Length: 492
Image (cartoon, rainbow, N blue to C red):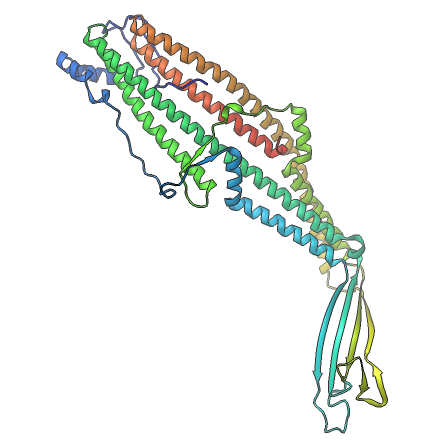
């Protein structure tokens, strides 16, 4: 891989010899600065002082603050993109919330399925009734047949209605579970895009930091050789001035690159760890990006695995089930209850009844069945109003589904084209960076032999910086485009 070398741009290059003081030209923005520096550096003594200025010494280091990290001696964590995604899934509140909603929807489906089945309960009761001095055997409450009544019942209950046969509630809960899973997948894909951007954002920031550092070294070297050439009378004083201006600009660019790198590390640390931990390193795998599948294959995957489309379809299904449930609410409901056990004046399998002592000892275990048929007759139009509401939501869900289908097709084409352009830009910018590296090498040789002006060196340095940064940006753009495409197709 090509290493970066950098410097801000000076667009116009004078083709005259760099030994002529009045023949050099540069970007108009730099002319006032050059004139001022030239005015302050008229005398040879000042020229010598300029050649030995502090800018030629080691560049000043700007100290940036960082939050406290892990305890001293804690080993650094090496993180790949997969590791970053696994760590982020544990800490991202949106993804965790969507995952828990999906699990809760699964429990709703189980509950809806179980609601179709009979329920069985067991109850134990004791009923104590105030007596009448033995004059009446069943005491003061005629509903009981004795002063002491014991109940031990097993109760099976089943409600039979249209939902029992059509399973509307269960199917709606099943659709709601599928909708929650689709939303969880949307959250997962969104988190993957976020992690990808921040992960490779740090890698690019590190690359640009290395680029800025190398550019600073290059500008320092150019400043040194231009100053030495001026002392020997082989180059003009304006060359030295341009070299120092370039050096100082690169020093500032280096500090900015350092700031960007530290900020990118902080952003990624917030996503990955439950507490801020800066003691980690990322694996630079930008040069091993996967290939872009053919569009036909991508389209097939999008039709099967597009979570947005799946969510819209499940929303429409729920609206259909709501309409069905609102319609079946007009039908009768049958409730059947079977009670088996005992209700006696003693807690035993056999005993005599207080109200019929002459009958002797009788069995206590038995059953009774209750069946109730409920027919809706009049509710002031409430059920019809609920039906209208369900139909309105059904119409809205259908419109949203068609809109999602159109948007998904459009987004698929747009995102795939973005990935194609990004992949092409990677190859083109890599070649451009290689050309810029060779150009700078040749210009440096020409300058040392007196065949190129200082501005040409500066321009070559700036061109190389721009080309290397463009190459890094193109790689991140391609990775991000792939991540965005996978939000529509699922992983490939």
